[in-house]
Amino acid sequence: MRFSERVTLLGASKVNQRVLTEVLTFAPRLIAADGGAGNAVKLGQMPQFVIGDLDSVDPETLSSFPAERQIRIPEQDSTDLEKCLNLIDAPMILGVGFLGRRVDHQLAAFNALLQHAPRAILLISKHDLCFHLPLKLDLNLEIGTRLSLFPMLPVTGRSSGLRWPIDGIQFAPDGRIGTSNIVSQERVSLNMDELGMLAIMPREALREVVRALGK
Image (cartoon, rainbow, N blue to C red; front, side, top):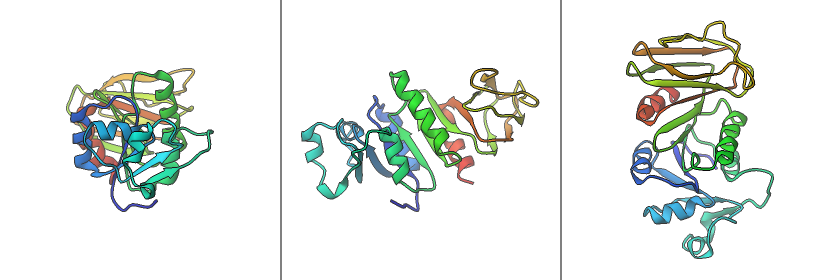
């Protein structure tokens, strides 16, 4: 499925109405990932498609979608998020409803970000947003903004504009991590030597992150 514009992907975790409304201003095309169809109906939205193995959607909700909008992928070796990412080709995907109360689901979502790097995919919750860092990214952020870096693989890089520079640090998921860093200058530059680093920051940075990843 190829789209020329950004796509909002809706998952099954609890979704804040205000968050979804905000995200849709950046990516009005809405697609539901399996149980996300239930979230869509509750929030008064009608996704263009519902994608997944469709085992998490109650029959009544599913019946409200025309058959041609239901894309069933029966295999059980991937999550519904992965199924959607494997199928959708878009300049940017903004995912809501994937960072919920279940830690195992969040870890699976982070794994999906890694598997699909360096694509521009953002996962957004009520408080945070998370994405895989490209090799180079420049951001204009308010001083004091939290900017956490979490390595999913061994990775090194350089930075400017952070209170604690990352130059010379050997990051690894079983070693040194970079959570709770803070923006010290309005212009932040991150240059990674390899893929494998996730960035996590407040949802208030969404507009700037969308701008920067879209360049």
